[in-house]
Length: 284
Image (cartoon, rainbow, N blue to C red; front, top):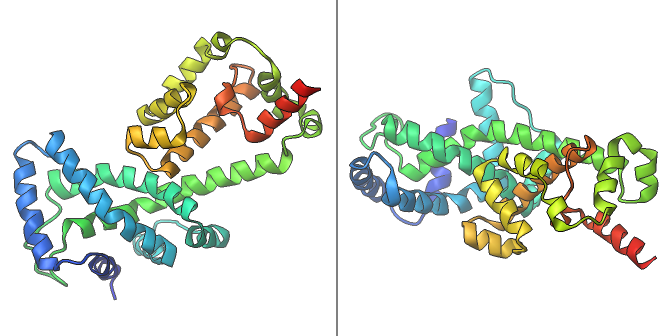
């Protein structure tokens, strides 16, 4: 069975209405959205609905291993190098948070490429006759997500390896920090110094924040203002996993800058281990 058929079957299994009815509905919706060039509020509503419909299907495919398997097949057919580590494969099948973390990036990338390829360039054809015939827009979007999975997974796996190396060296204790002064000295110095908040939010920190994607800037801005992850997720219409992912990535950027002695690390972005150690030093 061709992999495109597997994608279509996965979507058909995940949706209750008839495929032909979905295609007719989608064709009418595309005609309406084309008037404004697939932009504006109406398109945003459509996009949100599309992602909401596709999300549980994608999670189910990732949990079952189907999404990764199809991505591997597609890359093999096109001669693209792609390999998924056994540990990562098992983690994505067993850990809901890991699935959400990687799917957030997959969906964000697919959202852009879907609009361009399926709608602007007319890649989606409701009158397609070959094979199983035409697919609905949700099937096309899920397929685009699977295609984006290779790039997102590669970056995600690399980040996991980097964090594993860091935590293998550093367990949050002062002994580990003194054993690795080049790597962790500036970080702990930033964590233990009790400077005013104004010093924390220095120009260097603001410059580093401005280098991040707009959505990350919004998340971190709300963190600094004291909002909880739930508040941030609700306010920015993100999943909790997306909020954690962006905080984690920005924290890594902070650590890199702290090791170079360029910034202070805001209290709200310290690791739990670092916060606990500071509290213990304060009591002492």
